[in-house]
Length: 272
Image 1 (cartoon, helix red, strand yellow):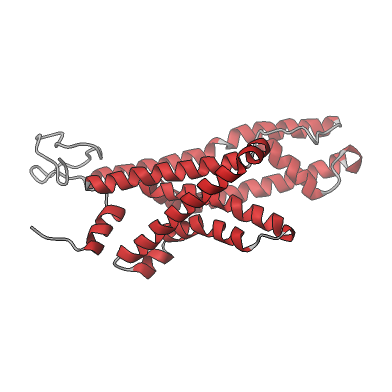
Image 2 (cartoon, rainbow, N blue to C red):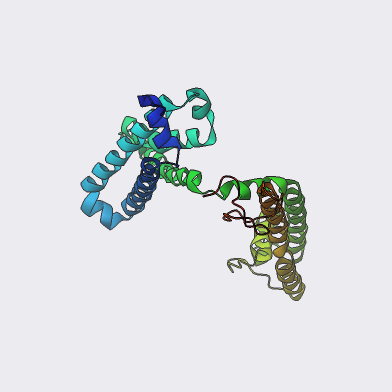
């Protein structure tokens, strides 16, 4: 039986999920993150902040110290601390603890807006939850595979809203609220995305006809990025299924949660 030293044991608990201790640590961390976000949300409500400011601040510092200890422990037990510190999760873990300390360094009233911005930065703690989402990597890879198609689609939409906005600026003019081409492009974006705030609306018949065309165009193109990402996601999931191959009959295409081969019934590798 292999005996683990303190650092290895710490690594097994913090970075691993195979042991009960590791699973308990992950669950406790998720609860801590969600509770800290709840405190941040409550502290933004003036009546709650005024009534319970001391309790909220105390709890905030408790969670800040907990996340600080967690970050130090991750650096301590990681085989490559610098690589972890530069990784996505390492940066997020650092962002989770920095705001409270930075706010402590700027107590003056002149820095009130800076402190408020730094406090809101604590919302990035929620990104720490990404490490617990097993399928998030599949979605991320799908987005990366579709990035060129999405870029082409985005560029096409950007050209469309520029053209439509410029046309409406010419048709309506400043007297109807379209005071500049950027303002008209804003209207085109709001219209083509079917949001329709109604703060700027065309008044002429030609403008209304162009607005109707823009609305219909918006409904027509909304499904395009969804289809692109769905296709890439389907391909990525198919690739993942192909990796699960039965060592008895070499059949592939199993679902990720399958424990036995769908053809011969043999136990799949890495299962059970």
